[in-house]
Amino acid sequence: MNYNLAFIGFGNIGQGFAELLLEQEKQLKEKYGIEYKVVAISTLTRGTVYNKNGLNLKEILKLIKKGEPLTNHCDVKKGWDALKTIKDSNADIVLELTPTNIKTGEPAITHIKTALLCKKNVITVNKGPIALKYKQLMTIAQKNKVMLKFEGTVLGGTPAITLGTEALAGAKITEIKGILNGTTNFILTEMEKGKEYQSALKEAQRLGYAETDPTADVEGYDTVAKLVILANVLMDVNIKPSDVKRTGITKISLANIKKARQNGQVWKLVGHIKTDNGIKAEVAPKMLKSNELLANINKGMNGLCIKTDIVGEITIIGAGAGPKGTSFAILNDLISINRTLKGINI
Ligand code: HSE
Image 1 (tube, rainbow, N blue to C red):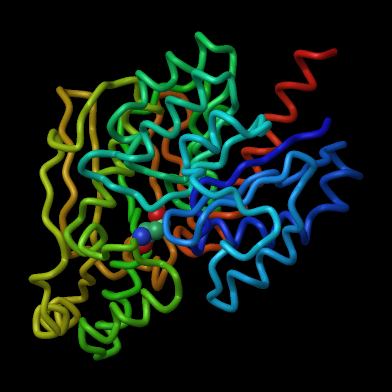
Image 2: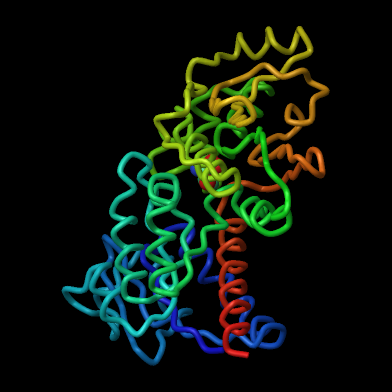
C-alpha cells in the first residue's frame, strides 16, 4: 500500500519520526508492504512545503537542523497554513504533531476534525484533543470511515493504549495506577541524588522529555491528561480533566526527599483512577515504600499497573517520553492503519 503523509507540526517529535521513517523505509516495505511519500510539512514558524509527488525529506531535515526556515525551499507554499495543508494536499494520513495545549486542545482539535471530515486518517501524539474530545472525534472518524490513532499520547513508545484496547480487550479494567510523566520522574530521580529542582528540569528539557511549556509537566496537568485518556479509552467512562484532583511536584523540596528516604520511602508523582465504587481519580505526589514496584521506576521511565477482573494485575514499564519512543508509537500506528486497510481491501 502507498501512503501520502502530511506532517502538521515539525518539532522534536516530527523530526524524530521523519528520521525513523527514513531509517525504517526498507523494513516497512519488505515486512509490511508499506510505501510512503511525505507530501507536506506545515510548521507554524518556518512555513509550509508541499509536493504532491513527495518531498525530499532528507534535504528538509537538513535545513531544519541548521535552523533555517522552509521559505527558500523549492516546494514552499506561500500562504499555506495547517488547515489549508490538511484540506488541499493529497495526503491520506495526517500526522498531528503540534505542541499539546491541555486546557483548550486547540489548534489540534480543529486540525484533527478537519482531517477526519476530509476523510483522511489521523495519527496524533497530541494529548489535548484526546483528553478533551475523545468520544466526539472518534464519532467523526467512524462516520467518515477513517481512523484516528493516538498510541503515543500515553507512555510514549511503551504500548499502553493498545495493551488495553487489544491485548486486554476481553477484560474489564477497574483500576489504573501509574507514573505517567517522564519529566517529573526524571526530576524526582535527580533530586534523590541531591540535584536541585531547576537544574534537573533543565536537563529534562534538554533530553526532549518536557512539554513546550513545562508547567504542564511539573504541575501535573500532563499526568491528568494521560489518566483521562486511559480512563475514557480503556475503562469506558467519560471524565474530564477537571474531574481529576491534581497536585504537582513543585512543592517537593530536597529536604522532603531526604526525610522520605530516611523512612525507606520515595516520592513519585502518581496518577490513580478507580471505578469499582464510583469514579475516584487523582494525580498527586505520593511517598511510596522503596520496595514497591512503582518506587523503582526511575529517570524518564514510566510504569502502569492495570487491575482487571479476569487476569488480575498487569504491569508495564518503559520509556514514556522523548522523541525516539514517541516516534516509535507513531510508526506502530501507521502499521496498524495499514493492517486495517489491507484487511478491508482483501
Ligand atoms: N512531557 C511528557 C513527559 C512527554 O514528560 O512525560 C511525553 O508525553
